[in-house]
Amino acid sequence: MDIFSQLKSHIITAAQDVLGANVDTKNVTVEPPKDKAHGDMASNVAMVLAKPAGRKPRELADEIAAKFQGVDMVTQIDVAGPGFMNFRLAPKIIQNVVAQINDEGEKFGRSNLGQGQSVNVEYVSANPTGPLHAGHMRGAVVGDALAGLLDFAGFKVTREYYVNDGGAQVDVLARSVYLRYLEAHGQQVEFPDGTYPGEYLIDLGQAMKEEFGDKFIGADEAEWLTIFREKATAAMMTLIEGDLASLGVKMDKYYSERSLYDGGRIEAAIGFLDDSGLIYRGTLPPPKGKELSDWEPREQTLFKSTEHGDDVDRPIQKSDGAWTYFAPDIAYHFDKIERGYDHLIDIFGADHGGYVKRMQAAVRALSGGKVELDVKLCQLVKLFKNGEPFKMSKRAGNFILLSDIIEEVGPDVARFVVLMRKPDAPLDFDFDKVKEQSKDNPVFYVQYAHARAVSIASKAKAEFDKLPAADLTLLNTEGEMNLIKNLANFPRVFAAAAEAHEPHRIAFYLYELASDFHSLQHQGKLDDQLRFIRADDVELSAARLALVASVRQVIVNGLQILGVSPMDEMR
Image 1 (cartoon, rainbow, N blue to C red):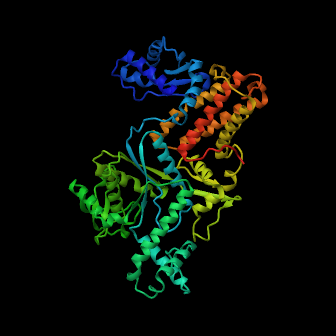
Image 2 (cartoon, rainbow, N blue to C red):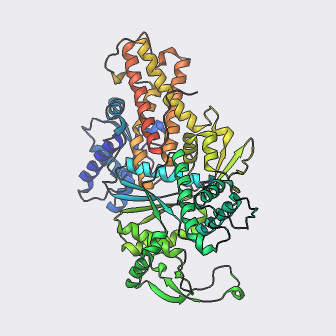
Image 3 (spheres, rainbow, N blue to C red):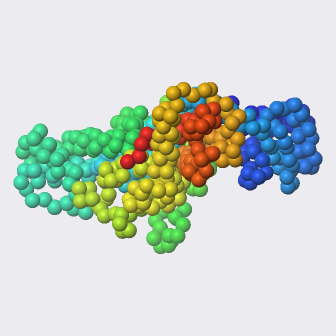
């Protein structure tokens, strides 16, 4: 158990002694104080329990504090402001965190928050019409890091990609490949608007020529469309899987949209909603902002999504009987629910913001309110190089390939830089800045902290034949104690990130931890007494090397969650 959880347990016990065993303590928090001068930890316990109990917060805080007589981990309690409680911990409690980290290793910070519950994280899900481009990078990284975060928290995670192979776009892909097929036979072709002119289809056109010869030249579209569509989709998914692998992403499952059409899954899902009284024939009001003269009311088949939190009911079938785009999405999430997932998470692009409420309504309706859908929206990434917007890729046709980015900076940089911003905040990705070896480059700063820890340990081996067991009570400088407190905060930050589905919190934390570590190392340059390795004091060196090892371990654990590699040395 981490020291934040230990203190919280004592606080809750004390509060129950004062107010009774049935007091509701779910909103009690224990966290670092905003001002380090106020103590080691702070709690809102008196603030949140006073009103329900009809008590004054400061008086309640004093009574709770009195219950800490004999609790060895706390040396002082101060009540501040309207009733916040600030706690000072016994130094050995803080110092022992170093031993806990080094003993637990890769398990430090892990929790059983998920208790083995199953969660499906769906992300990327790009149309299989070409290789992944820059617009897919953020969703891929956020989704994959979130999956890693939840796995670390004890959830059973499935990483899933929804293959959009059931819509008109894959027919357009097939026609684009057909044009490349004709081109491979020496014909001059033009790509009409809406087709895919990227050079990445040239090899596929040549492969179709080698497989089918001139069989389909001049043939009716009905003869070749299905064949070209299936071949092209498979080839594009191979490209996409390669792109994902280059970013360090490996999916557990690829789910075909076409299987929903072919297997009757759409009819089954809509039938379920119909049996629940949520499907009806009706006419929607005109969209907001539309001139009434432009609006033609039509009777459609609608889903009563407003009964489950949406703003307006949604059409699921057009007047000609064809399904809307919403219908297969309903069926897909119905399939997820039937597969038994306890939690569903979708990573959408920011342009799908208007789709969130209807999907959440559908999931509530399909699961009887037992499953919630969390949707994370990712803003676009703006790419810059040499102070200018990064130019389009000729090979892609009209977009920047993800592989171009990975080739330029590598997967670790791409992932960490993306995760240093909340996904719903704009992100400028400057190729020059992300390759700088400075504090302003967060991935370098964190990886350098790990490399520095490895280097210090290596120098210690050369300096000392043998080190004694670490006496952690020797770690008593202000800088050392502050660094240990930050290390102790990792399980709390991690748990909060997992509960909020926000992996970027781990990136922020690692950057702050690296800053504290680099600062402490710099102090050693200014004052020999503060160096990690003291040739004249083997016992102090042993304690400080244990601290260095704990820093390295927490960085490893955090980077593992984010899917970023720790570096043993920096070039």
